[in-house]
Length: 552
Image (cartoon, rainbow, N blue to C red; front, side, top):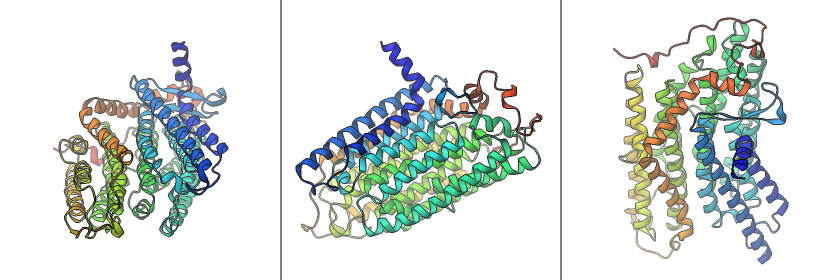
């Protein structure tokens, strides 16, 4: 019986990671949300809210267990491919789980589970249909990570974005609606550009299946090659907006600072969808084996990433609220990740993946911690100005010190290990000086910015007053402790995690394995994947980056 269950799960694991939150959301919608916000509909509606919480928490827990199973299976190197309707690729829709996608699904649930627990302490009752929309968000995130088709990547982007629109304004408030309008407009523009980019890809290759696109790009020439290069740049703009890369990051600080604490913490994974898409498209499809379209964005990605990291930390230094400080640190961390990715070597990609795990978990925990501190500062809330002392200075101070040390990259925490991996991987490359200067400089300025916030909150205090709220409940502190435990686990398990990210980076560079898994064992070199223009030409030699050239 156990073997049968395991076989069934392995056959359907890619699609189950999508349908589980989808069916949970549908069930929660069927239960309804009568009475609206908690406390307005009487005991019956309070009981209904508790039921919705249990269903959502159980589903998220199951999703976390499935994600752990995906990573364990992907660690062996075998790709899981699910063909919807049994239609063969590239004609049908496929979902693919490799090491990278399994890791991203696990990261999603590692963030979602503590965040949902925190939201269930009261935030979920400040608006309608929170749990249903939360599950739709998980559906969009998981789908984006496991899809093997560019158009369905767009579809899942829209699912997660529509859900994020609702979550952003959860709890209402003038500032949330104002920032929500900006957020919606920008993402609608990005969605339009996404469709244009997909149209250019289809015009050049005649397919949107990722495995098929990757094969056909190497055989393009003439106008089709031009279309492919333009498509690569357009998609970089789209994914750069999602990832909050310069000059497209200006929407993020205000949006994340305006969102409720659990929503902002969940949004820590949202920028990583953009990062993942850049890796999947510009590493796997437009990588070194893409012929004339190889590394089409290489000249843009690295300098923009370094500038993003630098400007992000400057924004953190100038932030006037703790929420904006953490939001700008999110931008800065994305810049560091993309800088390592922009070097286009397996070693730097592996370091970027490890650092991405750390930064996502730490940023999510800091957003929750900021609200706990703000709730005890009276009218000052999260403003960086002298206010009443927090009710629990030792507890919150230790948490703040831990989060700040990890975010800034102090040893022996994983932030330090991740940055050390990036520096070591970039050694000997032409861009080494720029990488080292920016990474070390950003780390130092992060320490300054976080130290400034800590001094204002815990030292520059006004005389005691009853204006502050009561101490934090153990139930609300539990998610923050969970994120701290995950951070420590990343440090303790740094070696096996790094081996996994090394294997994931290597797997991405071996595109032929991905093609064979999706298109069939004889896909490489078979007539199934003939070029769109009906001709088969030898691909040009792989293009080398200036940043990859070893220094003498």
